[in-house]
Length: 344
Image (cartoon, rainbow, N blue to C red; front, side):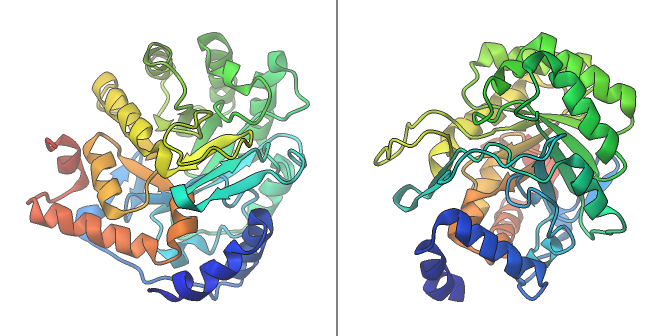
C-alpha cells in the first residue's frame, strides 16, 4: 500500500471534498510533490503537430485557473487540460457542490464553472513554459444568455488563443442552465465559426455529454467534420445514476467508474463513425492501465482522467502507463496507432 493510500488519502477523505482539493492544489503548486516518470517509445505519438510522450492526461476541472500549470509534468502526465474557463469570472454554484461516493469510485459535482475568468487566467499564463502539452477548456459564462453564447466563447478565445496547444468547446456540462442545448447544430456551428474567425489555426475540440442519443451524437460528428474541428472529447459527466450502489440524491454530474461502460460505448461509436483524421480523446471511468488499453483499442488517440486520480493517487499515472506498455508488449503491438487498429 502506498503512502497516499495509507496516510494521505484517509486524511483528505475526512475533509470536505472541495477543502481537500484546495489543500492538494496548494501542495502541488510547491513543486515538492512528484511521482516516478514512466517512459516508453511505444507510448509516444505526434497528433495535430504536437508531440505527446504518453497518451494519459489530466482532465479539465482539476486545475481550473492554471495555477499549477508548470507542475503537472511532475506526476508523469502526457498532457493536461485546464479550465473550464469562462469569459467572466464567476463563483459557481453554492457549496456544498462536490460529493464523494467511495464505494463506487465516483464523484458527483455541481461546481458551475467556478473560475477566475479568461482575462485573469491569460495574465497568469504569461511567461509560463510548461514542459508538457496543455489544452484550454472554454465554457459559457452563467450570466450570458444562450442566444449570446457564441460571442461569449469568442471573447474567451480572443484572450486565450495565444496559449495552449488545443482548445475545447465545452457545451456538455450539466451544471450551467441550458448549456447542453448548445450541442445542437445551429448554436454549436455559430460558436465554432466565431472561434475560427479569431484564429483558424488553433486545434479545436468539442466535448460531448454521455447522455446524448447516438442520433444526436451523429449530428455532432457531422458538424465536426463539416466545420474542420480537430477532434471530439467523449465524455463529460452524466446525469444518469446507473451503476451506483446507492444514489445519494444529490444533483449534478456523475463521474468515475460508473461512467466507464457508457464512455467506452461512446468511443467505439465515435471511432466507427469518424474519419481517421478526427482526433478522439477518451475520458470517463479510466482508473487503470487496462482501462487505458481498452479505451485506446476502442479508438481513442488520447485519454484523460480526474476521478480515478483522486481515488488512485499520484502513483496511478506511472502504474497505469507501465501496465499499458506491458500489455502492448505482450500483444506484440509496437505503437498506439497499431493498438487502435487491434481487434479486441
